[in-house]
Length: 353
Ligand SMILES: [Zn+2]
Ligand SMILES: [Zn+2]
Image 1: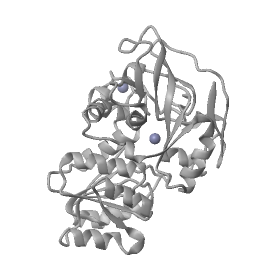
Image 2: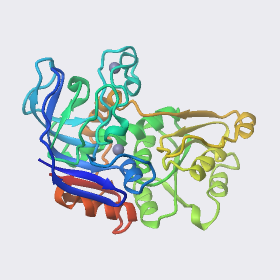
Image 3: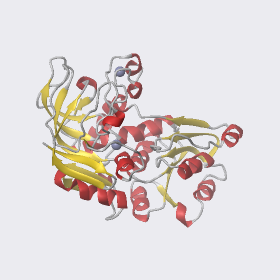
Image 4: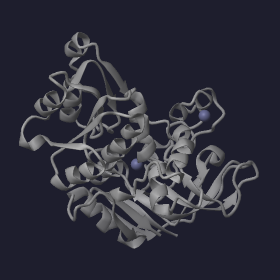
């Protein structure tokens, strides 16, 4: 089959790779019909994370079940599904508590990250390809209703549940002001999800005008942090208090610091950005004096997919305005190039095998 192989920074190539095969009875084989390129794929592409090359990229996939192992009970050949970016068993202590990101059976195995991140399940294939083997398929693949097309469904694999998790962690209450740092695909999904909780205002902070314009179209108040201090703008919009809830959706130190400093006394800071660095200088004195609540974590994607499927099916949320490009799988290298360079008004890039 064809797959998007990572050869090194700024070097991905679509080439022939081995066809996946079922390994255990709880596996399923999914024929991919749509895949996303994610901001976290860019950490490899841009050389920010050291990783052994030679693996197929991609952890955001939608497709059709082609084959199931004898131990798969909830899925059958022909089902249209979204594949969660994080495999989980659905049965262990953590999964039963709604925390599949901590699943005891997963190890650290994820799709499309190569051998560096291979946990108990071994190195999993990538989904920017024609097919993928999905372990623990019953709680990693989620059937899709016809009302949700493939383009919309890709968002369910990772970034929409991640944004939803960020909004939940923010404990947003009706009438709140929520400030979201970063208007990339995850940040804009956070705008969509924050609005589910009835805030009076969602402020979206970025420095790229076309991204701020999309945030505005989604109902947020755009703040360009290039044209002055985002902190000052947020303080002005909140009668001098700061935002009730801030959500960091970038994954860098300056955005995280701004998210902490922009929260009001007694407010909540919720972090969903993926950080390349292991340590961060936390302004603990400020957090103490301001009585801040700080939440961070890998989203419980599998736990949130069913509720997000319902919200999408009824039209309560629609992430498709975020799609800027749908390209043939063969053009994956071009997709990476424009997503990394932020050219061509790029937002979310989808690949079509
Ligand atoms: Zn992703
Ligand atoms: Zn589990």
